[in-house]
Length: 280
Image 1 (cartoon, one colour):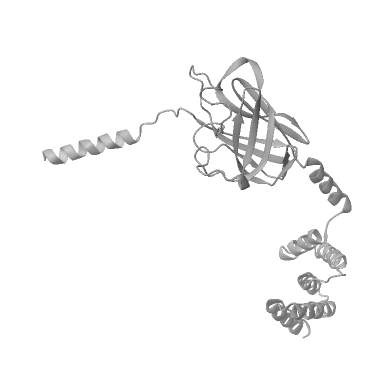
Image 2 (image 1 turned 45 degrees about the horizontal axis):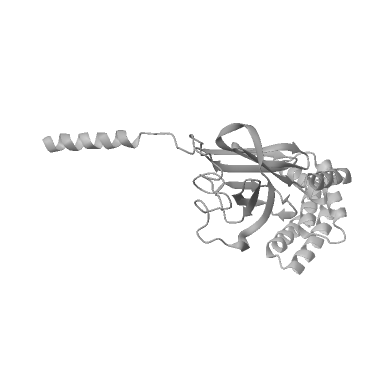
């Protein structure tokens, strides 16, 4: 009995202990900012000064720094961006820095899976570098902070601040390219794919067949230089649904021929079955 009570007591003690939570010395942080039309996300840990001298002491000058604490500080770009004069592909990267009293070398590194700095540094994984001034603030920042500042349509600055030091790393985003392409696409009107998808939806949902016919006709017309058997298949189905069986058969035969040429057995069978049904 005593052994049973002792076991229960120990189990209860372990359970209580497992529930204890204490603050992390370098709490994690995550920020997401839209810059123009590009999403930029930064994930990092935030060490505090706690009365210590930071740069030139806790963070030695001229040595590689993880730029925060714990796991890699990571930045994710949803589009290709430019840092300095270097194009950086969309993706997630580690940020390493090499501070001095007057400048910081900021390094964008393709491997973001390290805890701290990589044990084996690989120059081939450096995708961009930028050397920027180390500025002095009139006040202290207790906790290491990364922000995205000076936001414009075409870019912004990655901002690092701790103690009395702050650093800005400019980057540009492809807002003009994306916006111009979007405007030109809209001004050019719907694409063949837009007409095709709209017509198929109206057919499947039993909506206005006159509109479905108009849209599928436009889709087929826009691809007439390179006919698509799946477009013609949808056109034949819409025509058949409207009672235009003779025209549906004619279109289905065109789709059949193209499907046979492409070696698509599914569409060959579907067209053959439909032609047989509509020819009765």
